[in-house]
Image 1: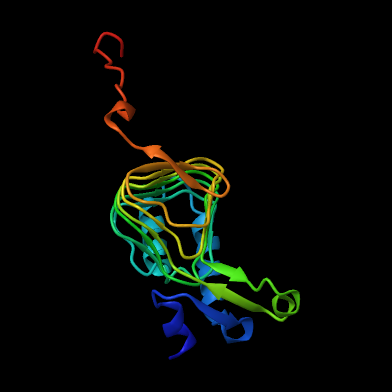
Image 2 (image 1 turned 60 degrees about the horizontal axis):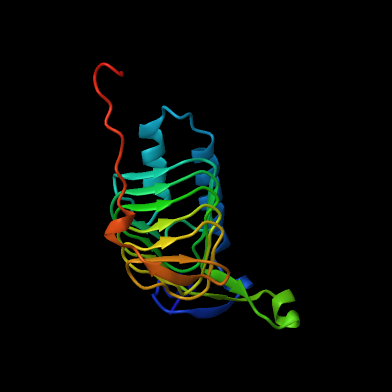
Length: 200
């Protein structure tokens, strides 16, 4: 199995930094730089860049600059995806973002990690594991998702949380480390204001 094939597998792995495909990271950095220079009205240009950058890019993928990722080809959006300002995805393993996913500003998805052993860490020995966001997930501002976690469908991750373990579906989860707090219920439904023509 080549390193590229290993990176695209749904299994965790350990690697030496010298084996990683640096030329593909250079491509991603260039595309991210190009994307981050676009004007807000250049939606067609943004869409073309995202299709070159992401492995799977649903037409309803919206990314606000500034955005950064390691490789891009390991990022897959599967429906409406809103990725807000200053998000970072370290996609040394596959990152699957389900339909109707919302990532608030400053979210970090980090598939990659380093050895806990100092000598190995200095030598560039690291780890990686996939991250999956199922459908209808909302990740709050400044949250960090570590490698190997899955966020279950319909769950909400509180702002500033650090997710080190998978979260079941339909939960509000918060904290460091992030833990399920309670289920999302009918009581959480909002009642938007109704604006009449006279008020407009």
